[in-house]
Image (tube, rainbow, N blue to C red; front, side):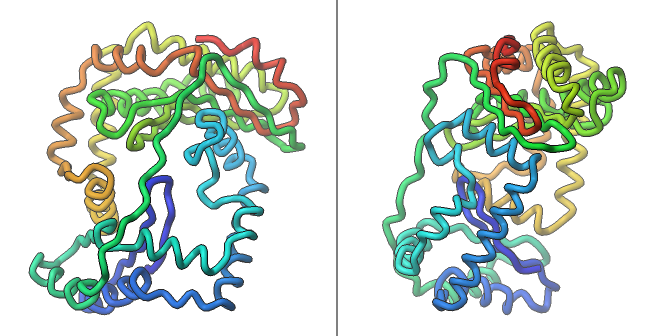
Length: 346
């Protein structure tokens, strides 16, 4: 496995190889970030690939509704834009612009190397000395703080002739270092991240409104998001939005201790099982070091989850579930936002 990925707050180059090929893998990844050729012909090929990727997203209403919700939650700022860019921005990108970005950002004081597996620290340090020690330090650009000026609910629709209406309701959440972030994580688990969650049982099992329904939570450096998604028959669009909002309002009534316990055990088990994969461990370590400068081990996170109480959930619910920060995005055969705007209340 050799690949790369760009998220909102960092870019990752990663490899997963058999133990005997560790040295070669470090050498190849080091070349990618420290001495890229950026051959003009290859750059043009990659431009076409990225444009095709953007086109595939445009053809996916489930992905489109996510982007639309982001643009409502964080309008006119980087967090609200597609990480892949737009057709205009990708087309306008020049080789000099790429090289300038690499010279500024791809420097040792802006870089974290994370390796998991049957390795020793001394061995890794020696490999990195061989491959990256000569890289000069730089002055990387700063990240863009999120802006929040929302004072009333927002709604936006992309009218498309789709077989399903794709509905996403979102609210600003909690940042990475917020003391109630684990409470919000568990709230999302019990609300819509399993087949026994509230959303699954109410919208799918009881009302038969959808096949796919879930909740989600994101944590960034200075903000976050909490929301729900459902794909439904267009004729059930209003009914489904009403049902989602009703379940969000019901959270204010509180969460029983036994429901919290179930969510906690699911979250812990899911995390611990993920730690059985070396790539997941590497991502876990590197992501924390890059964003927060410190690393919490699985045992510490388990302890944090065990400490969450129903009072903590209530506090997180009060902080996040605000009518003036409510956002509704829909992709489907619907012409007017007005039909849905009057429903936006918590």
